[in-house]
Amino acid sequence: MDLSHIDSRGQARMVDVAAKDVTVRTATATGRVRTEAARAIADGTVAKGDVLATARIAGIMAAKRTPDLIPMCHPIAVHGVAVELTVDDGLVEVSATVKTADRTGVEMEALTAVTVACLTIIDMTKALDPAATIEAVQVQSKTGGKSGDWHR
Image 1: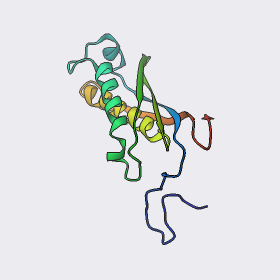
Image 2 (image 1 turned 120 degrees about the vertical axis):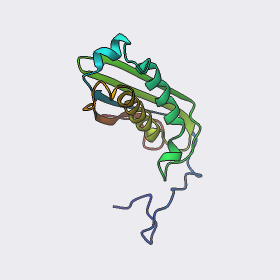
Image 3 (image 1 turned 30 degrees about the vertical axis):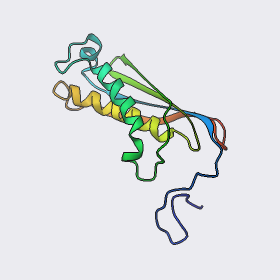
Image 4 (image 1 turned 180 degrees about the horizontal axis):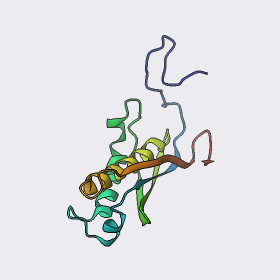
């Protein structure tokens, strides 16, 4: 199997996407934080502040900074980011949808948004639950581009 990020000498390279068509592309990723602090998050009683609002902003900011974090990720125009958080029994569910009109997809931006939102939740609640875990970070769907739509 040929790996697009490896050249003929086995060295890492950034894929050239210049010849690709600009198309509208979206990606949605999800993840969750399992934490005993879920009730305090839902009630808004965490001492550090509004966990859900802070995690939402962190996720949006992270999507825009993805190429600074992932070495072979192209800097692209991020046209929209929506981060949704819901608190359930012992869980905070995180979903991020990222949209662009560009030459490459936004799966990495969606995954980065979810991961950083989850990390923010843990950072803000680690005093309440030092054993919190991040689980099941994954791409749920993508649209656009040459390969078309994909759904988990």
